[in-house]
Each structure stands twice: as C-alpha cells, then as structure tokens.
Image 1 (tube, rainbow, N blue to C red):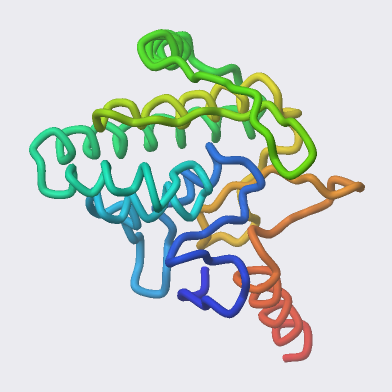
Image 2: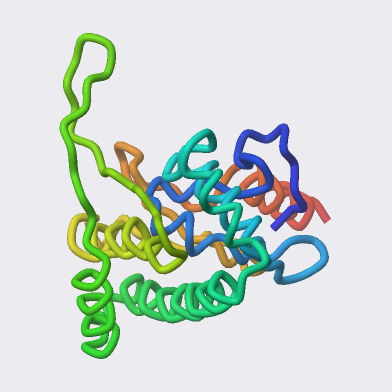
Length: 207
C-alpha cells in the first residue's frame, strides 16, 4: 500500500477510513505503509485521536476526560488489550472472507465484552429532526470497549458476508465493506492500491 497521502481523502488526522464500517476501520489501524507494518494506535493519545476522527468521541467534552489517560498505567494496559483484540478480530475477519465460521472462542469473548460494556442509546434532537444515537460517556479506559465491540457485533451479524473483503493488492492488509451497487469493489482505495496495481499491470502487458 502506498504511503500516507492526506490529500487522497482516505485519511483523517493520520488514520485510514475506507472500511465503510467502524470495526473494519478499527482493524485497519495497523496498515502496511512504505516503511512496513505500522501501528497507528501507538499510544493513548493516538487512540483518542482515532476515536475523535471516527466520530465516536467528542473532542470538546469526552476528549478532556480521555486526555487524563494518556500516561496512566490503566490506559497503557487497556491499549495493549485493545491491540490484541484487534489482531484476534483480524483472524476472524479473514475466516469470514474465506467463508469459514467465526470461532466459538471469539464469539464467547465478544459476548462477554458486550455484556460487561453495553452500549447506551438516546433519542437526540438534531436541527428539526429526532434521531436515535449511541451515547458514549467514557469514565475509564475500559469504557472504550463499548463502541468497539458493538461495531464488531454489527459487522459479524449485520453486514452481508460476501461484502466483507481484503484489498486484492498482495502487499495490502486493509479490509472493507463493499457497499457498491454491483458489489465489485476490489481495492481498499483507488488512490492507494487500485491505480498502483493497474499501472503495474499495464507496464507488464507492454513489456
């Protein structure tokens, strides 16, 4: 995958958002860049920035609270668990893409996290309309599980299995939910991998 190109529109504040689903955008926080595999959630400050970029966290209210966790042992311990969970999710998503069932062990863990960190909903007024929205009010680092595991639950139960794919570029590790009408999306992004692969194929044909 190509290096960071903020102008491409695939990046927001240093993070990729091309999965069309929060759990897949979370999965894509360890991409392969020009310099190799890169951990984008390198510390609690980065996680805070990702949550804000994803629209999960409000920078004005929630962000003030999460900033206290940047150097805390609780925050560091939680981040390690979150990174480990992301890699477990990666294995399960790859099973899903191959048509294999999600493991019972992962489902058990996911259901335990959903029970321990339930999501709260509220009807909120937006302009003249009312909408049902997730209420995210983190008090401790562990509360961040709530939107993450809710998104994973939605991915595994609400997204058509055949529409979850890995980018076809051999060097890319990004996954996406294909929301195109024909369901023919092949690349994580034309800006990152699609054009690169097409140019390489054109050069190969014309040798």
